[in-house]
Image (cartoon, rainbow, N blue to C red; front, top):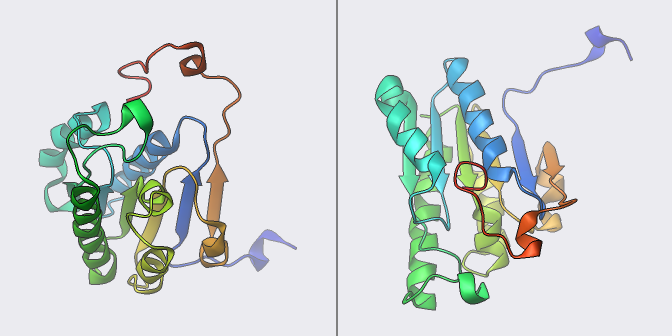
Amino acid sequence: MAFEDYKTKESVVLVYTGDGKGKTSASVGLMARALGNGWRVAFIQFIKHWEVSEHKFIQEIQPLYGEKLYFYKGGMGFYNAGDMSAKNVTPQEHQIAAKTTYDVALKSVSSGKFDLVICDEINNAVNDKLLSISQVAKLIDQRNPHTSLCLTGRNFNMELIGKVDIATEMNKIKHHFDDKYLANKGIDF
């Protein structure tokens, strides 16, 4: 097929998943690319409630982009993750936070106000049963035709693969966490 035979899509659905590092980093890079192209971007954070470096970065650049960059942090921390679980947060509080964040995502993706909506760690929320597969399907199906959507997090549910255009799996080859070293600020968070 010749290059001239290829078509372009007005918008796409992307997935960054897998057990390797780099899913959120890839979505932040995607955000930078979109903003550099003059797009309006919504970065919606599921799960992470603590101040991570990407939150600080987004908050610092937000004034430069004004209404072109919307940031919503709606997580309550890791759910059902053993010693890394959010302390003193009930399952009901996790579900309420996930649902509230989902509602923000659905409104953002369907509004036509944004060219790109990033739902960071949404796959984790589905895997943890804080959101349903049908809710993510609705997010994809009800997005504005001009709005691209990026879904990140471990354990993307393959039942939805037919609804996405680009799916990338980050596979861990080696990570020092397995040798009992904590995550490094600026690298891992």
